Amino acid sequence: RLALQQLDFVGALASLDATSHTNVLYGAEVRLFSPAELDEMLETAGFESAVRYGIRCVIDYIQDNAVKSVPETYAQILDLERALSPRLPYRALARFGQIVARRQVRP
Image (cartoon, rainbow, N blue to C red; front, side):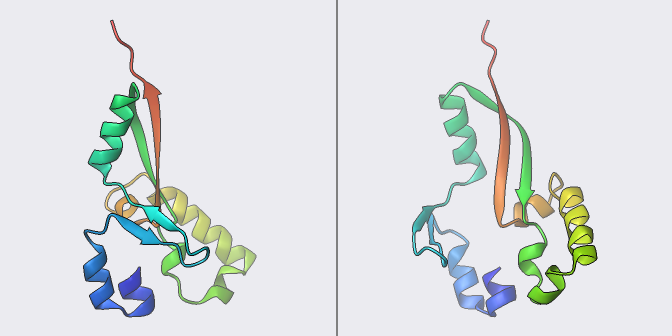
């Protein structure tokens, strides 16, 4: 996102292995977790990953905010988001991720 929206290629490269990020809107430090770290936390808590989704796969990459406000266009973007959300590599490029997990059944 940094590379595409802000043309900050150096920052984008540096952020690839980052373990935290400062939220621009609130200035809060946010911890970033890898998929492996999330799976480990879920397993430790007695859960297993069931399904992964990407949240905001497309909309954050659209520079023109006015086009996002057009109801018909927004509906089309939403349809695309829903289609891309569970699919790789799109969910991996999404702004956020969501994991639906279930409690492990132990014998």
